Length: 205
Image 1 (tube, rainbow, N blue to C red):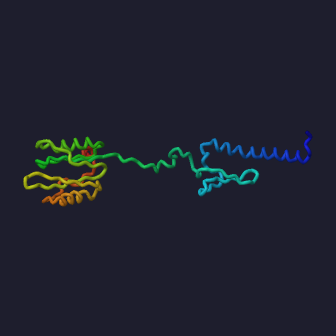
Image 2: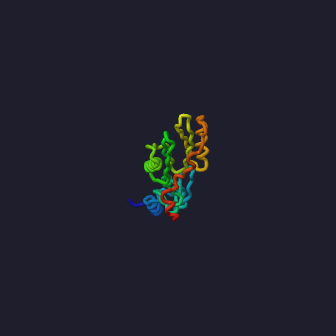
Image 3: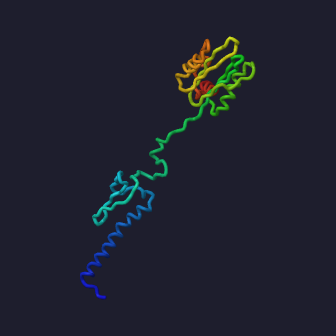
């Protein structure tokens, strides 16, 4: 078959169109294979979630895209580590009491609740009046204890519960008075769970 001049011209333009499309498809293919494929290389429209770029032929190309990002989204970038929330070190305070004798002991600055309880019980039992029991613990905060002695000689103890330093003594007294107990008083002033009472005096010497 012999192609007419007009048909040959149309066919040439068709081939040229394929070549032009091939050239602007290459960067799109590279973009799709990169780790930043979900970023927009042109104008991003957040309302529609599309990216607009202008092709070599001057026509606008639209394709779906995630919002532009400054880096790989798989984790924190080097600039973001300052914003990573830090985890506080767990420090415990504990109080142990002997309700029959009125003896008590406390502990602060330990990293485990069980260690704080054991230390408080040991401090309570140093006087040699019998075993003591754990009465209260506090994680990363402050703790206080109020007491009241009944007519039969037994002791009642009341504790703060918010852990907010500066208000725990008031809380303990309020708890005691709310129970209608008589002669309420602060027995153990504010304890800060972070105070390492076994270590800090040694550091000061």
